[in-house]
Image 1 (cartoon, rainbow, N blue to C red):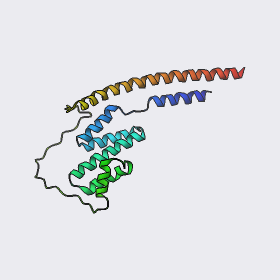
Image 2 (spheres, helix red, strand yellow; image 1 turned 120 degrees about the vertical axis):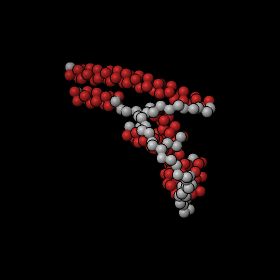
Image 3 (cartoon, helix red, strand yellow; image 1 turned 135 degrees about the vertical axis):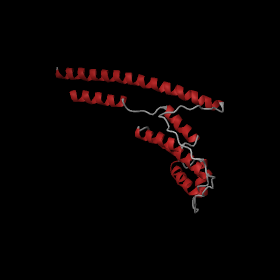
Image 4 (cartoon, rainbow, N blue to C red; image 1 turned 180 degrees about the horizontal axis):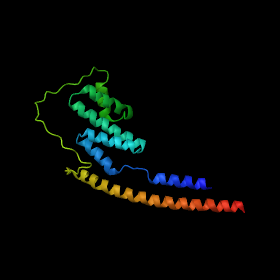
Length: 189
């Protein structure tokens, strides 16, 4: 009986302490992709994998990364490097029109990366990025503003829902334990 109780309590504690990825992190990931900050997006993607989010959600975010990175390389005329990303994305999402178009365009051809001739730029000392540097976000349309506002609301609602589920789960577990104890006492009589 004690083993069952301890096992149930352990499972409850583990489920309550599981690390979750917030919508803000996903918003920052997509914002990084939009602004072509691929290193930052890749770091967030690694964080998602370590946190063990839902596999389907992780694969979607990873595919979005491959598409953005592939398109950026394609625009820079680095076709060989771009094809590697589009090939990965095509293996997961064959119905996407952009992926399908780029993949069929580049498949079966001998590809190479064209080197860009850039004027020498003055050396800029990169500043150290703080843990979460707050940036000013300029919003171009109403749809973007609704997305930003609703992403924070959704995050609040998710946190409240997690708390409610945790409380209800604890109560349900206590009731279940009480029922098991009562059944064991009835069986002994």
